[in-house]
Length: 168
Image 1: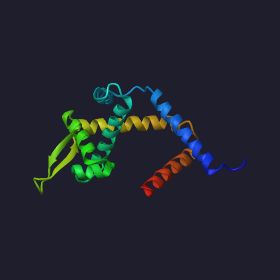
Image 2: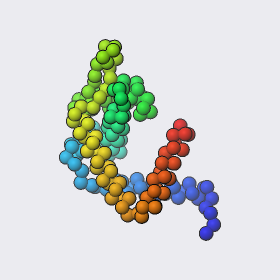
Image 3: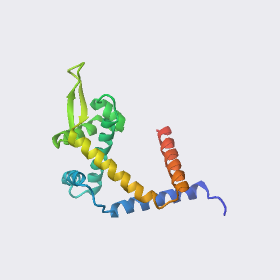
Image 4: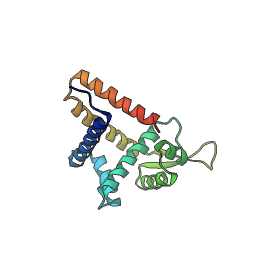
């Protein structure tokens, strides 16, 4: 079989991504109670716009991942930089997450003027629940492939992410 041109490959990737996005919209998995509560709260923010609601849910996960992955609790500026979003966007989401008990503002022990951010116990539990749920879903998909193909998929996805990081 002749090798595809780059333009043909681009078209195939674009179609595959569209298929994945459509599939995601149709998935109605049973989610743990904590995640369902967060989903309802986020949906109230944008009752008629599911894409915005999904974006807020995604941003909770991204913020939680940054907060859990740091040795020192980040400042709002450090968080916005890690998320590649404006400080105003990060502030709005953190304000909402503080009001709903997922994130807390912490005093810096060395400088009272600095405010740091951390997950509350509820936020940590929700993030662990979300991570476990995602891993369960990934496992369900990967089981459909032989081990060798799984390794290829993982290597290619990792390489794709590395290339995207390099081009930023």
